[in-house]
Length: 312
Image 1 (cartoon, rainbow, N blue to C red):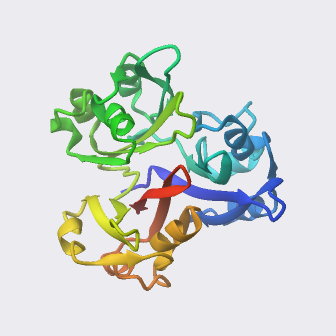
Image 2 (cartoon, rainbow, N blue to C red):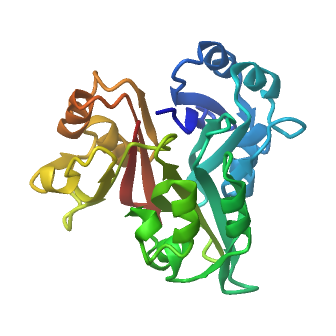
């Protein structure tokens, strides 16, 4: 299987909070592009990370050429053709910007979508933009679809203000585009709320296909009632591993491994190699053959609501 996402970057505020610097990253087999990224930083409203910071919402660049993506030449040499930026805020203050970088291909199935609703003007989530690889028909369906609060994956995320995992999308009644998903080979979906202005609703959907999965394993961890530990809430694994059953009796403490660190700091964690993480879930994932991990904190009003994990 080929990865749908070829690189992941986490840009974090500098010591004086005036620029964004590269923090954790997953570059797979792109050492030259990694070196060029480590050598630069972004000011507010500069480049893709800076634009996501200034706009306060996710941004999709289906094509990098002739845009404000400042590393377009380096990306082209690395075979990267598109990028999606997702900011993480705690109130009005930026914690980090995640950038997902993809490359085109004839069999490049999957999608990263951004859905938006301005509640002052309407009641429907509509596709703001997205990257669909080679799934032109599914893009067309998405552009013609809208979601009310509580309907479809984006609408359910909006209603619950929580991340949601859906599996077997081609046969899931709650996924309105199930027929199109089945035709495109899309198998699983992850929806993440990206709202920090209550009047501007944003939802990001990650839709994964068999041959080019966005993530081979996804989990949602939530704090327990006393907010002392993270407990598994829901999960999907393309290998059929019963994640929820395996970790029903196991919790993570704040700061424990990459997942617990996302709770402790409010900053996404990325591991390009899992061997050094000694927490039980990540150790088991490493032993099962998974290679990398992204842990995303979902924050509301300064409090962690959940941590989303994506393994490849």
